[in-house]
Length: 327
Image 1 (cartoon, rainbow, N blue to C red):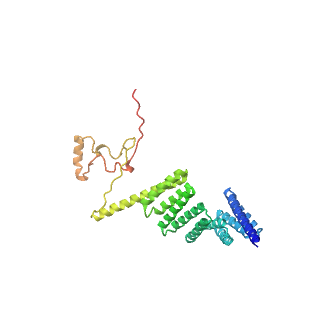
Image 2: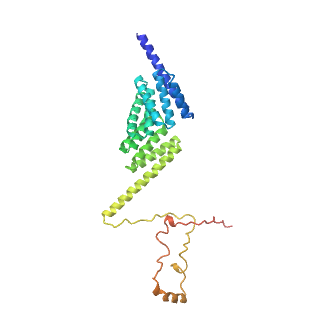
Image 3: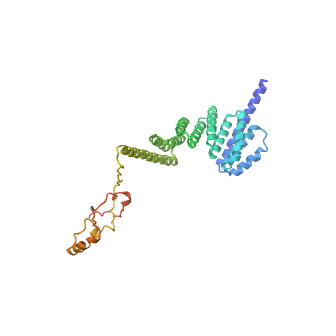
């Protein structure tokens, strides 16, 4: 009896490993660029031939991932849920974690945030039981994204993202850790911009160490957004302080930009007698001006320059050739 039980357990383990190999094979087809419709059709044909539950669940999972790639979400979700139920009964932890990850991807694609949060928690727990630290970190990152998109508790999303970053670091995945830090900064940017700025800078350093320049550019965008949010909060505090003192308004300071190599733009309306630095009028011009004084309002320039001359929209640069060296 004991020998028969051992043989049955060995046969079950072999079937489980075969199911995992089938899943890896189907994912390899999709990764190599096979048409998802062709992969789904092949999985449907194989489902009509197989007898074992483990093999059936593996082909169901392959069909679900192919339908997900083909944007047929309803059919993919139905197949993935059935595969998850079969793997849960069979006790195959690796296949169960893979099926839970596929169901999670489908909930995220369908924007079912409540179901995505529950599925991500179950998938992370399945990966932890299977001792798959990298899979647990990936599912924790998806859990953080689901909580962030849920827009209920951004601090919880940031906390889960930081936990995922720690798990990625323990697994040796620098790019994943930096992506988790970027998500944590994105969750903080509206409620705590100073903390978001700090975490986003850490994400930039992480992407730089991993050599992921696309992620580095996305992290730099978050750094700029956090700086803008901090500046906006500071301006709001300054305006509130001015209002508390009884000031009518907060005095605006025109931005000053260093003049680059060039000349001041010529104002076509400031020439001749209209300029404060114009030549003195002749006697005849003064007599004409005194006669016409009664019919027009007196006007004079107080200065040749204005307070907005150094503002960005008054900058008109002209090309100046490079100075020639004296012989």
